[in-house]
Image (cartoon, rainbow, N blue to C red; front, side):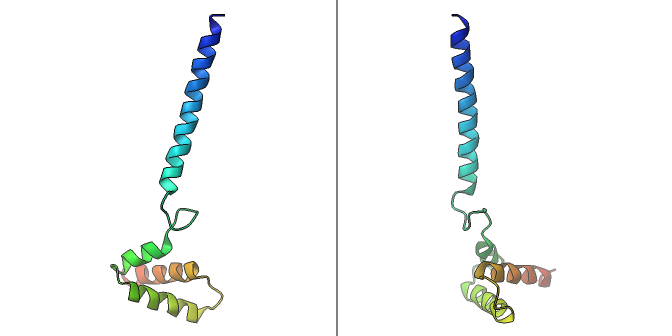
Amino acid sequence: MTGLPVIWVALAIVVGIVLLKWLRKRSRNFGSGSPGGVDVEGDLLRACRGDRALLERLVAHELEQNSELSRSGAALMALAKLRDDQR
C-alpha cells in the first residue's frame, strides 16, 4: 500500500514534463506564417527593410521568371537572390 502514492507522484511528474514540452513546442510555432514555422515573406520583408512595394516587385519578378512557383516559393527565391546580391 505504501508504493501506491509513489506511483501516482511519478505519473504526475511524467505527465507534467510531457505537457510542458508540448506547450513549449506549440508556443515556439505560434504566430508563424506557415505551419512549418518558417515565415519566408516576413524574412523577405525584413530584408527589404519594411518596403512592402519592393517585396511585391521581387515576388512578381520571380513569378514572371517561373510561373510554376507558388507565392512562398517565389518569395524564397527572391530572398535568396537578395541575400546573394548583398554579399
